[in-house]
Image (cartoon, rainbow over all chains, first blue to last red; front, side, top):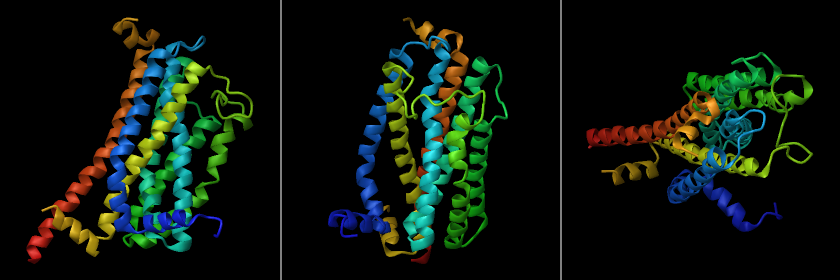
Length: 253
Length: 53
């Protein structure tokens, strides 16, 4: 603990307090939106216009700029959900519980986008919308895990109990994450191997790689924005009897 | 490059633009839904406060 600067510890404790979180996110939101718009603008301009067509796949490969970042987000958000869920489970921090459950619909959306755009990419390139191979099937299971988390949370009325149940489900589902990531290496499949996340140099030209990384970063900022929006609603609802929420309601008049 | 050429995406326009269109709609919905929920929360809370006064 003594290795962590005092300012960081103070920030962490303040962020765990609902009214502080609410006020802080209000202040940073415009900046997050500006950064997101810039990243997306440059990413799409680079990906859809500047980058050349692929020598094998023509222009169809341009789906990569949303497909791959979405797939990365589907895994990243799942890990955030499992880790914050575990923090909520162990230390009973309300904000961690709320971040975990608020991540679920966003993660489910990115998983859906990865599957959907993959299907639209597979049709012209593989000749089929869908195959039951390891990568696609494990990603579909990820979607069901997200939906399971959302459904379970909705089914339990006491939200603190619901958060516990959801955290356990999310933690059990973590076993699926390495399976998804390594599926294209462990099994021989129609899905192409990794082009960026491998030990060797990325097998993609810089003019294609830069927009891809910009889009990956843009989706991270999108997640932050969407997450904060959902966390705020959940906070207001859970804390509706707290003094700071009542004060906020009065301000709205 | 003309606009037509750009939109046709070398014959893959349908696949590329459907991907981008659906992604846009899903991501937009994820912002709009919580914003509407928050507005709704304040409308309800205000009503309740007026009733209790």
